[in-house]
Amino acid sequence: QSVLTQPPSVSGAPGQRVTISCTGSSSNIGAGYDVHWYQQLPGAAPKLLIYDNSNRPSGVPDRFSGSQSVTSASLDITGLQAEDEADYYCQSFDNSLSGSVFGGGTKLTVL
Amino acid sequence: EVQLVESGGGLVQPGRSLRLSCAASGFTFDDYAMHWVRQAPGKGLEWVSGISWNSGSIAYRDSVRGRFTISRDNVKNSLYLQMNSLTAEDTALYYCAKAWGESVAGSSWFDPWGQGTLVTVSS
Image 1 (cartoon, chains in turn cyan, brown):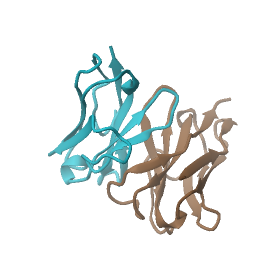
Image 2 (tube, one colour):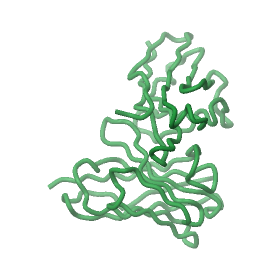
Image 3 (cartoon, chains in turn green, cyan):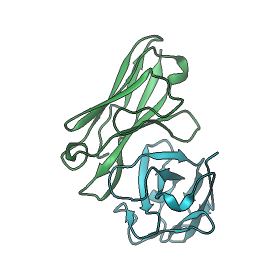
């Protein structure tokens, strides 16, 4: 059971929009700790996608966006492409565990 | 180019030890905290441990505290993870990752990540 809760899977057709949620609690997201998102393509290491809730590193398409609200965060992907098929993870800090925490991951399938 | 290269993984019997290394290049190593994150086969990411830029602050997840020791050598630009009393639940691909800032406290993102080194604990 992960400290941050994500849906196990989401899917969408090419060109559509999907949203991946990340639900935390008062000891992590609700305590004001920022949320970061990673994309993990099959067989590859995770890659930073969004940092500090809504910021995109250089090179990440603006089809990817993030938001945060109270005890949850969301990753939006618009204009879905086949290459977006991957696992997505949210990450934050938990002050009761005194360490970083990840969501369980969400597998995105592009239909 | 920032690069992290892990090594030291392998097959080890339960109860034995293993030491992982991560060689860093392409950035000022002693300006940043570093972390170990693992991923069991077919499972999600799990943070293991983090160390601040000067080794002054160290953190572990509960399941490895007392068995694992993280360390760094800022002269050799290297990060280490000494793993003792290994169990089957420690079987995973271990990634090292560079944190955004100096500290392990607070929510720092990890970028980049190495390619990982596989640790298999089995008799």
